[in-house]
Length: 232
Image 1 (cartoon, rainbow, N blue to C red):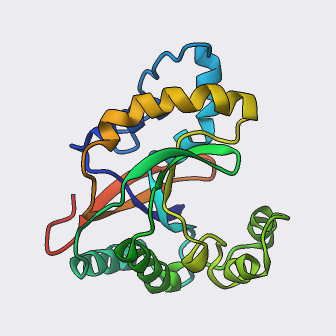
Image 2 (image 1 turned 180 degrees about the vertical axis):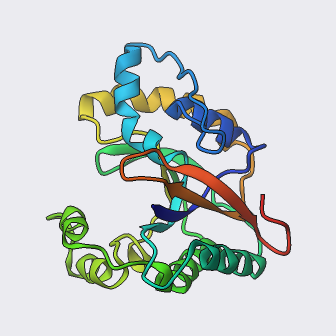
């Protein structure tokens, strides 16, 4: 079993419903959802282009997926999550935009946010004792040619290159897609998400996602509201 600490929009926010419909799955309920019809794309193509992010569920990574370290239990993790969330203060996310990241389409923050980066850094560091070191196969999978020396050092220290100075808040909407697909899909996605992105979105809870067995879809197990709110 793997655990991950993610940002997920509030269940009442339009971004949650629109994002889940686009990906074709609600990771909180586990329900499969009918994906929208996109001009010039078959339903099969849309299903294929969204396969990778659909397995993880709509989210932005804060603490990347990890196996529990020896001597640490799920109960320990839940207790620490409750304590960590109670010490956090909600804040408004920067404006999100549909954009390309490398070869995939994502929702990303238009500007850097000091509270967002501070939260992500604190979360990665505080929960690192729960993370089992990655095995050789996982390290090899993440050690791609494009990693520079700093990213490689973060991978070795934290098990993931895109943390701390390498962190960029984003919510994946597709897997890797060719340039021709990007050019046709981006305008449609901008229109699809425009109403949701016009609504202020708060980062007011940390979501625990779980992968029950290797390769299975991640599910949103529980939300931990910031402050002293009860977990949902």
